[in-house]
Amino acid sequence: MLGLDLTIRDNDIVDVMGSLYVKNPVALERLLTELRKEGYVIENLRNAEYRKSDNVSVEEMEKNGWSLWFAKLPDIRYGLCGSCQQLISVSGIRTHAHKCEKCGAVTYYELIEGSTLTFVFNNDGETGFFTPQLRMKVKMWDIENGNLCLYPEFLEGGLSVVTGKRAEDYLKRNKGKWSYGLIGGEKMIIIKYDFQWDRRTAMIEPYDSNGHVWNHKIVKVWDGKQYDDFDHLPVPESISIYESWHWTPLPVTSDLHTRILRAAGQTDDQGWHYQDGSPWFKPGHWKEMAKFVRHFTQLNADAFDLAWPTFRSDGPGGIADLAHFCHPGAVVRNDPNIGNVIFGLGKAFEGRRLTEQEIKAAKHGLEDPLVKRIFLSRKD
Ligand SMILES: [Zn+2]
Image (cartoon, rainbow, N blue to C red; front, side, top):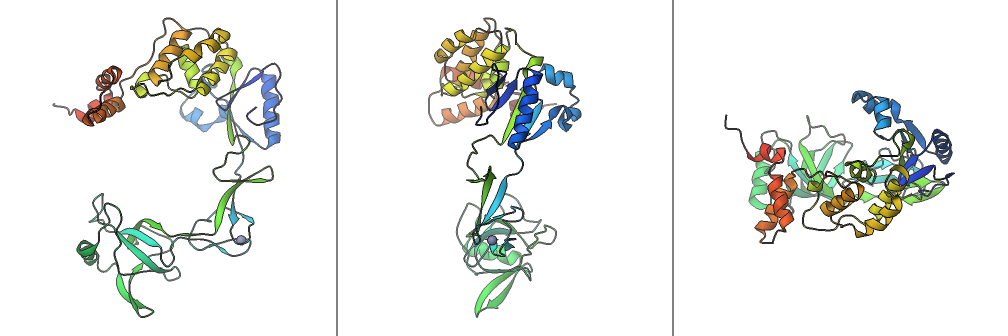
């Protein structure tokens, strides 16, 4: 289950959307022991700070089916030095001129000759969206003395990046924050730029840069094997664990669909979704919900297995079909949503046709309290 070798007896542990639902205390004990053996660190959420600060009682957590345990792998990220190919600490690995603790090679250069840097002068009188930015090529960065040497040409790039006369003017307005210097007989612009950047003393504020030199990569190491940083491990890096015996079986009520959607990580609000019929729910969603239905509700699970392939796949339709299956008197949430107003307007401006449902949702969206706050000013 979830790629882990777990002991399961009579479905006493069920996985839904990567979480584990445990049906009795004996199974829980066994599960936690096995997870610890696999290397997971387990947090008892009954003691979690957020529970205390939100003033939620343990009874409430149990009754409302909150996750009560959180298992996660310890930090398994390492640097892999590009020079010695050994595993090193990730701490500081991406700071300029950081040295590998095993072989002393530099793991990363932020700015070297030929890198480009986009920046503004650190000048409170001139900040904001329309502040001109300069993009310039780096000659060298002397971190010992905190001097950045730039070629005196202005490069193009981006909306706010200025060149030509506007760049010259901007430079002039900020004289005192830079100087000319000769390096190898060439005239350069020199700016104080300390390794430890500090807003209070810095001359410039960097926006972005490129042309870095990487001499490392980040890897994950699990069970003696290396994985790329973004690779999925064969096991989950974290797992939420639920104690289902406090709240199952869930009776058939008009809001049961809400609970089922939540277990699948889905909203129960039709208004949240696109209103143009675009598909949202995939068979995988319904299959996870089907497991939840079978093990934790009083619904007819066999009937659900037959029914879900007929459900609509768009967000609002899928929610409605699920809700209707669960209870004939189901009340479906459809909150006014500003997104539907904006999306509808956008589509209308582009001259595209809105579906009836989109128009309805856009009108309904005008009731979103956010709309009132943004568009309607108080007259009193
Ligand atoms: Zn090394």
